[in-house]
Length: 244
Image (cartoon, rainbow, N blue to C red; front, side, top):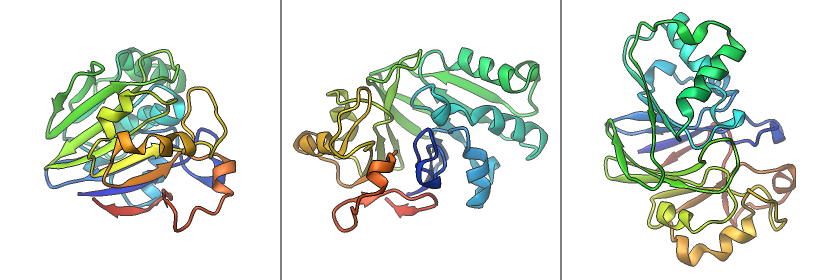
């Protein structure tokens, strides 16, 4: 399995980074975790064919994590000429919010019949399920966004990738991270406590419970980006490709 950070930035493009979007590449499936507003641009920058994506898994319904979906869907219909099915899975409320977003950005677009099968699945928090070749554990976390926010653990071909999404500390992260082959953790600040977000000190304080096999930090503020973390932590960069 490989994971490419299509985008690892915060909502405000700190450091010139794209919004959150991770590509997971495995023999059985190629999927995205989150699809922030800038994701279609980022996919093209890194040479990723949108038609290669089997499914998109969404953590929560903020624009920097799901706002790229209308562009991805319309590109599939009008530009990339997609013919194979596309699945989008995310928290309860995803279907309605996606329709609203498409109508705000491109009025009338939500009523167009695609030339490919588009399936939208609303994941039930704290209930493991299977989407295609992917086993997904969605755990409810703490980040107000008008719908239940999720941390996700995806298992494909025997390898697991876990992601906190945006959240303050909650014990739900333990089930997501324990023994994960790769744990992608929000580290918005180093030690400053901001409600509904994780800071690095808090993540480190719980490492004995989280126990991932490998951890990479993401979604960092200018405060974090200005610090010298080299040699101490793995830090995401846009375009970075990892072997999992």
